[in-house]
Length: 457
Image (tube, rainbow, N blue to C red; front, side):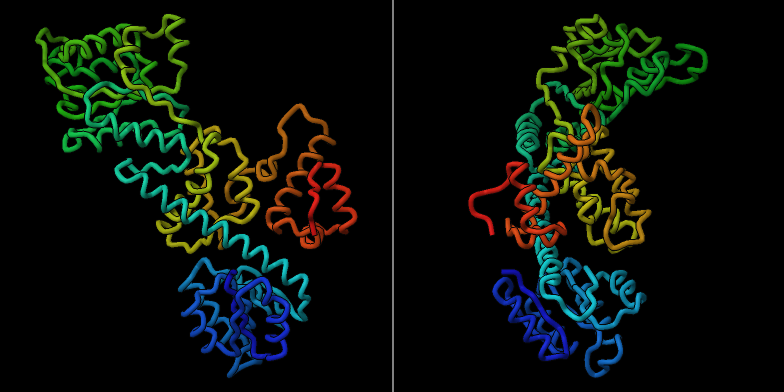
């Protein structure tokens, strides 16, 4: 059972709340700030109901706010629900700014308060699951160049990296933009005997064709106008290390021939040179293109493909890594919150839904950029959809095309019912209260969507 701490100087209220909540939560009680903080330090309750007016100044708010700040500073994940008879708006705003989960004004309606506490408990469970997944993902990514993943596809990729790192065979990494191809290449290098030597990366699509050959293989003095000194290329810089060729499908046919020669003979010639230079560099290539289609269109040499792809690693897009999306989002949130010196607790429910349901065409890179943007722009303790720069249609998983208004409405209605069911463990009374409809209407709607189970209360 979730630990719940009730802090109120009114004994009748404490008794009422304990009686109403004791069956669902492990309840502790305190009548003043000192007693509350002592109890909290022992239990670190996941949920706290906190009255602002506490002895020795029950008519003021200082003791309540002191208690709130202390609890949040020691346990930022605790959901503190401020329950007070004061209705001053500035007190509510101050409480939320200090990290309170919610602000509830007396007199207490136990049914309403139960819904708020239930949501807080549900959020605590989700956050705890995310923390465990992040710990598991962190353990798996040791030596993985900072990559995070706990889904089956990523675990398989981590295992492949460990198996092939000690060999010297070329590797071809295939995946959409933003999936982390360079991180995979770095992980292979860092886990290999070559890790003390250089990891040299070059984006073949970012350099003009006229300059790329010299960039890769270097040039001799006087090889062309402006070549005033002998210069090594990226391949030579990677001697005894690893050369990462990103966007390999962008290479011209003449450069593909030169790269194939290097893979076969382990020698190069600088531009304007005649001398063979031996280079011992492991080649890791990557592309977001359909390489087999490029081969069929005579844009990429088949023999080079087989030379590069002795080992091929296919990275899944983020939309296929549903288990990892929130882990990554929380990782970036923690990282950029720390960098910005902000104490941001997490994502609100709409933002979390948005993150889970959005397609992420830019993959992990796009997710990281959105979270970094949100951290910089938000003034809240929780990231919202607007902070992420995404639309509510993403948050609600609204259909994007080819559906009528009725079909779109039915889809959204069904999703909201499913989420309410999950949050309230199928309790029909709590679901109807949360959605603002009667139990009879709820039964009718759930029956229409095929969600009505034989046993529901």
